[in-house]
Image (tube, rainbow, N blue to C red; front, side, top):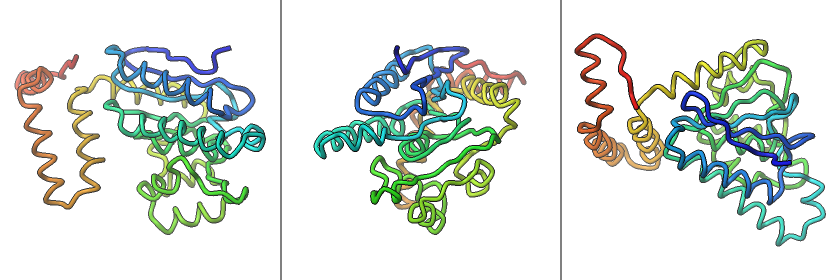
Length: 256
């Protein structure tokens, strides 16, 4: 059984994970996820990428602890390298990536979601957290660094050193979740959100992502220079021409 597949609908590429019981991963899983992400990135029919689980109770519970315990240290380091590569693919992807959380999102599963640009969640009763400290470890797939850049430093540190999990409502309150929807309407409302994004101009979305992520590591002066460079490159694009024409004609722009 193939645990990960790509489905495309209305310009949204859904990377669907289905590995019972908890979407726990090992190196083969991460290698398959990496190739599926690359498939979505290179497919011209995909403008927005979404990662979702087909399991009812889990988005992803992180690394398979039993496999991790049985592996040699060298094997576990190889798995961590692969997991970090997947997170890098997502964060540096030229397309916007959205995580759809509708079940427990723990450890490496939360690190996967943190590597995405946007996180949507249902209000179902499930847990979100980084419990690695309970194993005498720390997150190794970007959890400490990406969490710090999404929520405030004090809250990030608290979540990391306590290992405590929080509910979706709490995650929304601290800015870890972008949107939270009723469980009964989660699929419909998250689909509407994704398809609205997919109607936008791909090159402009790519430039915004590059400007935001690149600029936060720069001084304001250099960040503004980066923004100017990216903005200048868009003026002659078909999307910009369509956007300006649609504005003058008082209609909605139709982007490729």
